Amino acid sequence: MNIFKKIKTYNKHGRRVVNDPFHKNTIEKTKLELKKTPKRTEVINFLLSLFQRETCYLEIGVRNPEHNYNHINADTKYSVDPGVEYKEKSIDFKMTSDSFFDKLNKNEILAKDIKFDVIFIDGLHLAAQVDLDIKNSLDHIKDDGFIVLHDCNPPTEWHAREEYQYTNSPASGYWNGTTWKAFLKSRSDSGLYSCCIDTDWGVGILSKKHPIGNSIKNTNPFYEYKVLDENRKESLNLISFSELKKILA
Ligand SMILES: C[S@@+](CC[C@H](N)C(=O)[O-])C[C@H]1O[C@@H](n2cnc3c(N)ncnc32)[C@H](O)[C@@H]1O
Image 1: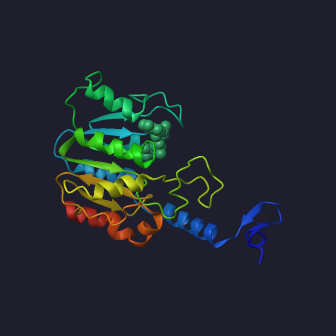
Image 2: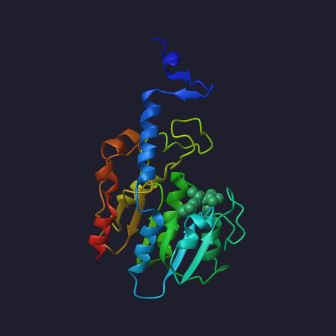
Image 3: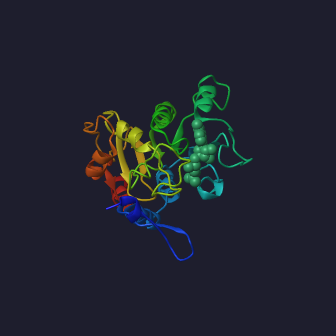
């Protein structure tokens, strides 16, 4: 059978309808993920609410601040974004996360010894960059603080593609990138506890102090998507928001 004949069909309006199993499955998984609650904002606000003190929040990668940043309840907040996708004027530090941490370490911005209660990493979603963002954040997070990462649980390999611009994939414009690889790498750091809330494309959490999940031996040395998919729950320590609340109560 000619596979291309089976895949490419057109509806009565002349629109391309793709009916191969990869597209169908990916469209279903996208729909399922979009329905999940709570969103990242609620998870971050819950973590901030645990501190009985004035809180300080840092968001790396903001895009439209109305989507998350403006709704975060912290006493002091700082935003970092080079403005690649959204020309937001009210960003505190209009630069890449690398430049931000470099300037911070050189004492050129804020106070050199500033520590944050929660750092939300949601900038460039490629593993090497996220890994750097995690390393830098670990130097500037309070001992009992939380590092939160968006997009740690891509539902299909098409969501986990490296190329953001390619929207003709079964995941269309939805993109989690390869953040999951950096998160999985951190899961094998014996100095860190971690879990991933099964909502909003996977809200990963790292903590030096709170026992939200023990580190694991990395059984996916080549960071292959299929291996992640087969061991998703254990690999990411995928838990629900209510489970997290119980652990931290
Ligand atoms: C997924 S959006 C952020 C969404 C936002 N945090 C939210 O919750 O709605 C990613 C943002 O990261 C920014 N970005 C891209 N490369 C970056 C980098 N190297 N450092 C910091 N931010 C970056 C982009 O400009 C974009 O606005």
